[in-house]
Length: 261
Image 1: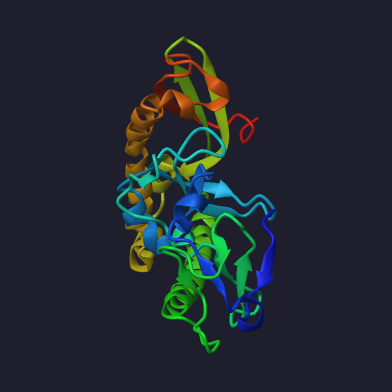
Image 2: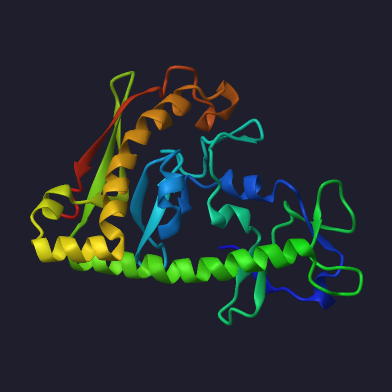
């Protein structure tokens, strides 16, 4: 659990954020939080799924950036391979507090430094005013708060219609072994087709219908994930696996056995 501290000019006058903060954060995230308004941009790179919030159990939207926990295949040799960085990356290590007027800071020594540093962005000016960088990030977080609410409404509506289908990702490896990844869900296409004309019209008016189809379409991006997984440099393979030992042949989506036990 990351440690969050209130941001203030008194405590953080000389604190700067390193230029690679977004990449440092993303490097250990195989799932990245996605807002409703980001689906079309994120799906250009990865598949977008529903995933459970670890603490609340509520459904969220997430982009799948690796099948290996604590790994992000879209980050290679310090370069982001994707066409888009989700807002959760762009704003790190800044967050809104329970009171949205209070900014919080993730106390992450990897991206926070004291004093001037090459390429780093100050949080405050010398006289204690928010820097241009901080104002931009605060504006992004304020907009993201609205997107968080819109995403919640989307997920609530879709779930109420029974359109969330829990999945197991069946990883078939080149050596014949297999592995199951649990905890994800997608749109139940069969139930979507059984909705009444009135329900479909309502989803269309809300702008949800197009996004549901976009999530289904994004699943084709798993092919790119397989390619990147198989192209990993030997030094980045988990647990020192040798080349070929964990090459992915395919990823199949199966209805979760636990959800329909």
